[in-house]
Length: 457
Image (cartoon, rainbow, N blue to C red; front, side, top):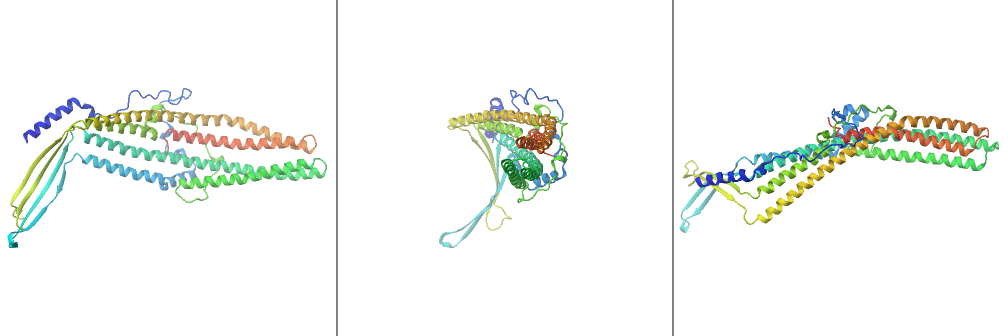
C-alpha cells in the first residue's frame, strides 16, 4: 500500500511539473480578429442587433406567424436536432460519472461431489468489486470537457436549424406574395391585351390597320396568357416547398398580400464581435475548435501513465447458509500502465490532433469571413431595393402615361402599332420589376435577420 501511494505521489508531481497543458481549458486564439468583418462601407454601432428581436415581434403578419409556429412544431430537421441534444446530454452525464468509482456485484457458488460420489460439498463467494481510475494525466478531465462542448454544440446546432427554418419559411411566404402580385398584374395585362385585339380587329375592318398588326397583337396576347400558367405553376411549386418545411403534405397556403407587408428599417447590425455569440454556425465553428483543443490534450495525456485502483469487499465460505460467512474478503489492488513501445504511435496521434486543431481554427476564421460577407450582401440587397423604390415608381407613372398617349394617337392614325406595343411591354416589365424590388427589399431584411443569427425566441 505504501509503495502504491508513494508511486502515485511521485507521478502526480511529475504530471504537474511537466504536463500542465494537459489540463488547459479552451480559450479563443488572440490572433482571430473581427475588425471590418462587415466591410468598410458598413457602419456598425455597439448596440442591440436585430438578431435579439424574437421572431414573433420581427414578423408581424399573423398568417406568417402561424406558419412559423407550425414549422417549429413539425419540421423533421428540427425534431432530429432536438433528439441529438438528448443524446449529447446523456454522453455528458456518462463523462461526468467517470470520476466516480464503479461498483459491481458478482456473487458465485460451486457444488462438488467427493470421492466415489458419496459426499457433496458447496462453497460460495459474495464479493463487491470496486474500480477507480485516478485522473492524473487528465484523460477524464478532457473527455468530460469534450463531451460538454459536444452538448453545447448540439444546443447551438438546434438553434442553427431553427434560424434557418424561420428564415426559409419567411422567404417562401414572401415569394408566394410576390408571385400572387405578379399573377394579378399579368391577368390584368392579359385582359387588356384581349381588349387590344378586339380594338385592332375593329380598326382593320375600318381600314385603319392591316392584318399583320392584328396577328402580332393576337400573338402577344397569347404569350401573356401563356405566362399565367407559368406563374400558377411556380406558385404551386413554392406552396409544395413551403408545405415540406412545415412537415405536411402539399396544400394551399393561407396568406396575405404583398401590399400588406411592412418592411422594418429601424434595425442595427451591431458590432462584428456579436456574431461570435449570436450566429449559430459561427458558434458551432468555434466549438469545433474547442473540441479539437481537448482532443489534442487527450493525445498528450497518452504519454503519461494510467493508474487504476481496484478492490474487493465481501465474504466467502462453504455450506448452504449465507448467514454464517466463513471469512470476509477485503483486498486493494493498484495498477499502473506506462506506455513504452507506443511512443511512435502516440507522437503520430498528437501530430494528427494538432493538425486537426489548426484546421478547425482555419475553418472558424473562414466561417467568420463568410458570415461577415453574408451580412454585407443582405444589407446591400435591402439598400439597393430601397434606392430603386422611388425611381421605379416614377418610371411606371411615365410608362402609364406613354401607353395612354400612344393608344390615343394610334386610334387617330398618328402612331404606329409598334409604338403601342413597345409602351405596353415596357409598362408590364416595369410593374413586374417593381414587385420584384419590393420582394428583394423584404428578402434583404429577412436574410439580414438570418445572417445575424435571429429567429430564436
